[in-house]
Image (cartoon, rainbow, N blue to C red):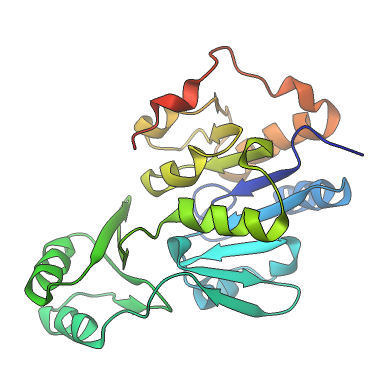
Length: 239
């Protein structure tokens, strides 16, 4: 069967999950989406190990984009595909010496929290590195220039052979702009930041996973109900 909406792409924290945990109803609804023949892609800022420590069903997803776009992971095989360069050792050491805490280092991401963004910018400039800083509420993520959830999203769709126009996307934070702007239908859950709500096709009445379930139930029963009143709304996404 050919669906108009062939897959969903969703952020994890604050979207599918509340305080790191995904509710049973959300899991069951995601499973129904898989059983309908559609694909599911997770797009998270978390490092893979961090995700696995709180979520035990990674095979629910066809692909996982981790580290805010720097890593592509195949749950069915365990294959990892880095989408960015390894963070420079000198950069990480300078942040440690600055007292940045917590500080985590992934395959392509270096993450800390506010107010250590000043130390991050200082280290980037002092070392002359081609890195960018991406925020998600209190999180401060440093990635190779040009790597974000949007580039990870494109890499995932290329692997699955899907067009972005056929994707329903869900998010809640500022780092979700990058991939939601590419989706055929974009959704912000009720607890999303105001600036994201202003740009998407739909804002849910429910928060976190409950908001996602609200839309997925429509997708499963009558996918043509996912329409929007203002054509070209995603043109309002900041570029």
